[in-house]
Length: 329
Image (cartoon, rainbow, N blue to C red; front, side, top):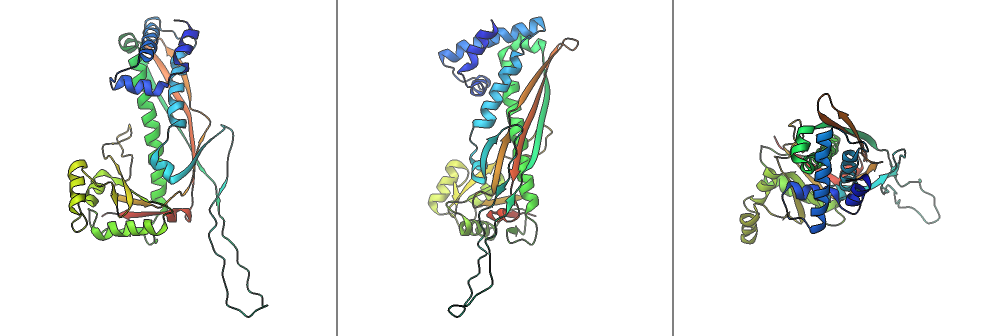
C-alpha cells in the first residue's frame, strides 16, 4: 500500500470515530471496512519490517486526536467557558462582563455627585501543556495491526481530556474557599436537603437560563433520593434511571467515580457538589497536538510522543461567583 493510498484512505474518514467503533466492535460501513482493511495490512507490515519511512502511524494518530480534541463539543465545558482555538504562537487576553458598580445618589436638581464606574476586569489565561509517550511493539503490530493503533489512539485522547478536565476543576475548586458566599459546608458525608436546596437556590438566583449541578454519581444519586423532595413521578424516574435529571430546575451532571487518570487518581474532586449558573471565562486550545514517531529496532517497538497539547483557562474570583461549591465532611 503506497503513501498516496494511505492518505486517500483516511482523508475523508473521521479516524477517531473509526478507532472507537473498531474497539467497541460496532458494525462498520462498507467504506470503513475498506479503510480498516488497508490500514490493517499496512500496520502489520510495519511490524514485520520495523520501518515506517513516512511516519504514517504518527500521521494517522495525529489526525484522529486533533479531530476529536479540537472539534468535538463537550456539554459541561461548553457551559462553563467560551471556547475557541488559537494559533500555536498566539496569546489572548479577555475581559469580564461589566460589573454594575454605578451608584445612583439622591440629590437636588442641577447638582453634581461623586463619579462611579463600571467594573470591567481583565482575564489572563493560565497555560498548561500536556504530553504522553508510549510504545507499540512490533509483535503487537504483526498480530493486531490496525487494532493496536486504534486502541492507543482512543486511550490517548481519553488521557488528554481527563487530565484537562481534572486541571480545570482543581483550579475552580481552589478558587472557592471557606467563608465565601459561594462556599457551602455540608454537615456530614452525604448531601442533605438543606445543602441541595442552597446549591439550587444560589444557581437559580444567578443563572441566565437553566443552571447545572455537577458532582460524583454517588452525590447526584443522594440528591435524587432525598426524603421530602421527590414526588411519585420523580421516584419513578429514579427507579428507571437511577437518578433525577434535574433538581429545582437545575440539570444534574453525574461524574462517574470509576473515571480515573492513568496514575489512578480521580478525574473529579471528591466530597464536592458544584452548582454552575453560567460561563465563568474562556478555555482556548493552542495550536495542534503533534505526534512524533521513532522506530526503536533494538527494543522492537514504535515509540510515539504525543506533544503540544496546550490549553489556556481564564477566569477570576469575580467570575467564579457563577459557581457555588458544597463541600462534604
